[in-house]
Image (cartoon, rainbow, N blue to C red):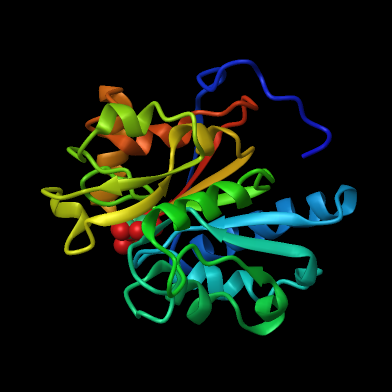
Length: 246
Ligand SMILES: O=C1O[C@H](COP(=O)(O)O)[C@@H](O)[C@H](O)[C@H]1O
């Protein structure tokens, strides 16, 4: 990110562009092409680029499409937006999804940084994630749950004020009592501060329900109730790109 100077506050220029696509195929390729373009631009001016990916049920097709992009993937580091407290070989972990849907085809040679590792405790995993985050990410892909959560920032999570105001890029999250977290209540997540340091942020959502949730969140403007709002913040003043299809 050598050619951009962050604005002083994360709130500066907080906004979004809503891309409504005709169908799932167009949605898939539009998002994949947009991510590949940002990585390609970065690799022209920098020796390496960083990409952060989310888990969940939505982004798989985009990851598969992106893995087919003819990029110099050996110069791309891939990290996670968030992780459930599971090892990478657990099929419910976000790392597993990235392995299965993204680290294939051309992208098989990208350098993946899982957060969890056998023998690493939660604090160690958070510290490792923060160490990786010293290098700013070029682009990050976010999802949103029906409850308005993004990454592993949930409405009603414990210690929400501290998490949302953290000066770190990643923190441990205790989502006990949050239905959207399902059985994976211990998690690691990018914070609003970490998110605001990423110039190119995409939110991938599908279905009328999620569109309504996003619009409700924007209208309400309450980040504790609707954590997805933190993806709008940018130290660079760049808008969030929301990719949606029915
Ligand atoms: O638990 C999570 O959920 C969100 C949203 O997932 P989706 O299944 O509604 O698409 C995801 O972005 C996040 O990475 C994941 O940990």
